[in-house]
Image 1 (cartoon, rainbow, N blue to C red):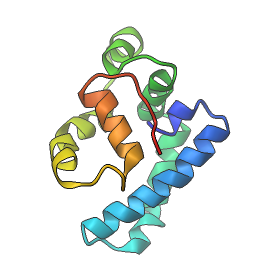
Image 2 (cartoon, rainbow, N blue to C red; image 1 turned 90 degrees about the vertical axis):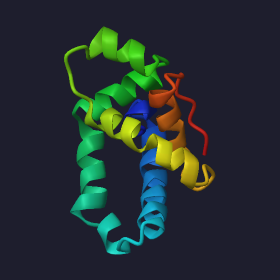
Image 3 (cartoon, rainbow, N blue to C red; image 1 turned 120 degrees about the vertical axis):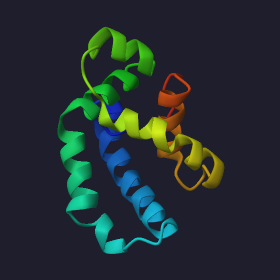
Image 4 (cartoon, helix red, strand yellow; image 1 turned 180 degrees about the vertical axis):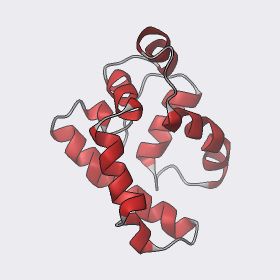
Length: 123
């Protein structure tokens, strides 16, 4: 979603690059393999998710200034946005256990979804 918020300009490229850094940090935090970040489950999934689908569509709406609830109701009323469902599930742990300076994109997105705030990307 965060890459879609870049509206497919140079900003999306920067967000893609920063997303890789955050995936590496999280893989290390959870004692995963660094290689996973660079494989299909990491970059492969990030690329596919960013290039289309419901998550990137929601990201575009968030990037245009809609709150999650506004975008869902107005544009995606009958769509399941899996990334948002995951965000709601993991947010309490992330907010409590992980330093927001280490994963600023994820924090920005979680706040936008869980707290229904306009997306403000800080990195």
